[in-house]
Length: 564
Image (cartoon, rainbow, N blue to C red; front, side, top):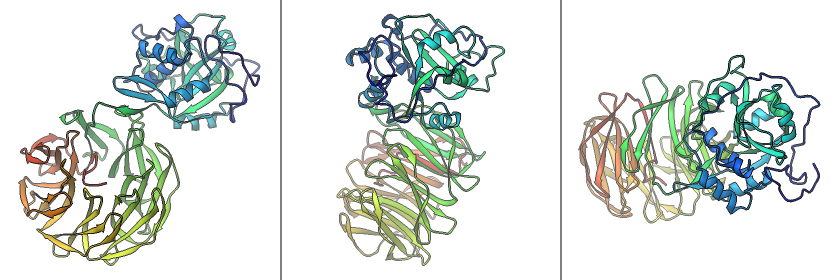
């Protein structure tokens, strides 16, 4: 390919050599043989009108969304609007399309579907290609002349509707790694007789054809390849729906979710695995990610491929842990904190928002419980019970970067929770040696601490929420097994006494609806999930109602609204 290319013709053109990073053209002498059987594409699957314009760039972008997660289909009209808006209805460079998708994306149903960062990929090495695809879909530049030659039955290309078009010189395709049988399932078709469905395959879109191609054939006709992260929703105006995650009687992770913001619940659905700790966090791009300890003691994670869409499956992040928490840095990167086998606090972090992870590193100390909060200036702060039973803390020396050593705040505690007041001051809540709830607080945002003071009662678990009007509210299990609560009488100041909300529970989590009403989730005496909710923001409570199932570990997203 030359360094410069004339104005784009119909279809996609090879990216100028000067733009390519590490990828290099690879054109074998002979195409590799593979089955010639056809897969017939269902007629309801749209072709996005690309055949009318000879545009295989934007149409492929739309298909990428549909194939990677079948719940999302980009409309014909939006594809044409997008291509027209960017002046590429008749074609564009692959690199240009990727840049535009990062900065613009497809707009549909109050969402913006956006491709993340990109880098070139060496597809000539099968192992390198597979590693790249595990990070996200790969866009391929397909040599059209070779594709037309290959489409004689000598390759693993099988599809319907293909026709030669002399105007096309470089087609674009989505490389969706997975078994051929899985790809066929995404298209709603069956693998033809004689085709080994267990072999790796790639979905491909060109001109008016949708199909699947085997790896040798794909490599034989590819000129360039670009890696992109999976499709993400970067803007949503549809509101936040709560999600509940729990361990079921089979040890797997089960979840349920609100069917609409602030209202209605799905049934229980399994995400598989075997876990005994759970944390849920939201990536900077809006995708939920679940972290858990697996049967090997390591941290495993499972993430939405798009916000509100399907799930990746479980993957290990290694280590050996017996305490776990996940928080978001000021710059949007998730960070995992855990107690290791040596009793010290360990952490790992995303190397960029929504993508990639560091290794494990020790923050030292000896702890047996911990929690995190964010200061008003964005710096994370860790609080933990040390070997002496006292509360210890350490903090980031700058937002998203660097840590102090460990320092003692005294006391003796065996339960711990944190919240941030409406004025930005962190407040610590803990159970003391007398079983009562004790607290201490920053005397000013980001700086200074009061002594310990008692809030009374007798508790053995707790969680904290924030009312819509800014007042913190504490929920705890009392000596009778019921949920008890107390609340600030004004934002950042003063406390009521303790009052019972009834029930009998042994798991407790607080979350906040999109409309600001807090909701309590608990495990009841029957092992099922029960909930109750504010009847209006900052005021009044329903009775208890069952959400069914059998659970013994509970986590809710968004996390307790009192937490930063």
